[in-house]
Length: 80
Image (tube, rainbow, N blue to C red):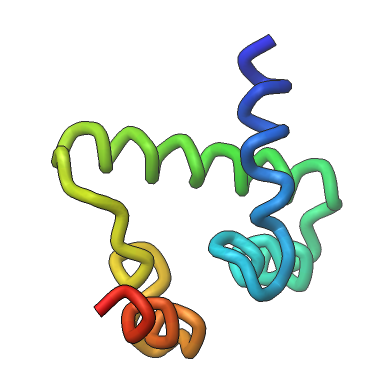
């Protein structure tokens, strides 16, 4: 049941322009089958949520994607 809930939360983020899209695409190009790549994305998502809950910080996309990603910079400009 938990796996389905996490899957429903992460699958919309698999698009290339979304938060976990580049990671999913990287796993697929490395030769991982689609189902395994989705599970890897789900695991990464859970690690992100857990680290945010431990640090008690607000979400910062640059922390998870790096400052070089253009949509992260665009989002930060919109927030500021």
